[in-house]
Length: 260
Image 1 (tube, rainbow, N blue to C red):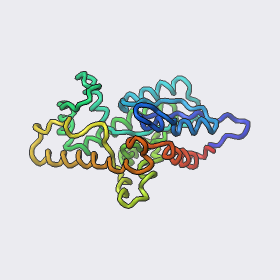
Image 2 (cartoon, helix red, strand yellow):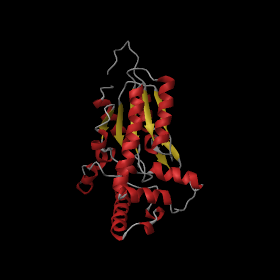
Image 3 (cartoon, helix red, strand yellow):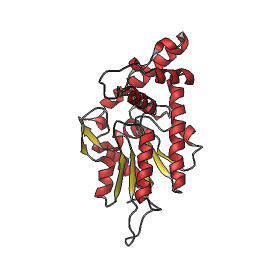
Image 4 (cartoon, rainbow, N blue to C red):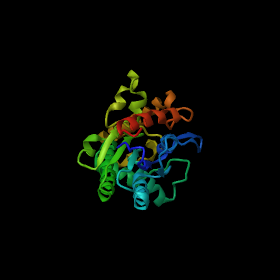
């Protein structure tokens, strides 16, 4: 993977939602994160990241960027967010409530939860769809895509069937705070943190009593996981990894991929 002094370095494609963009302060990116670090190290970086969207859209953007400039040997990095945002964002777009600052009940999302038998089951279903689409893109270019767990960890059991995807960092969160005993469970492949929605968007009236109790408990667990964002790697905004956290990821990736 290391080029000789006379060879051109591979391009680095970075895809994902807001976590792929760098350190945030309010609505502004104040440091470019791993993209900036790769640029400073002499790499050409192709930005395929976009905030406040969903994985299907991100994967489409990545495919477009690859079609424009991918060359064999280029490195593709993809950061996973909340897999449920795909369902939530699309329904909010359909209902015209995407820019609303208040949560609104989403019937279609609630029905998907019911059909899956719970939030965690629905996450797995969504990961299956997202990984399948991403793997098709990797196959198209006869390459591998290196996957990084962001607000939700990579589900390695689900990803195992997709041979063109590599779970290089199953949990960025664990990489940052997993050494704290109180956060050790963030290594679990089903671990995730929800910060863009809460249980108010779910129509609990359609569930039977037992299913409703389980879904509420699952939602509260995902929302309660927000407390780990009090740790230093997520300051100043308490939602995104800061530039030091991006440096940890950058150093890990360059070592694992033999890029420096």
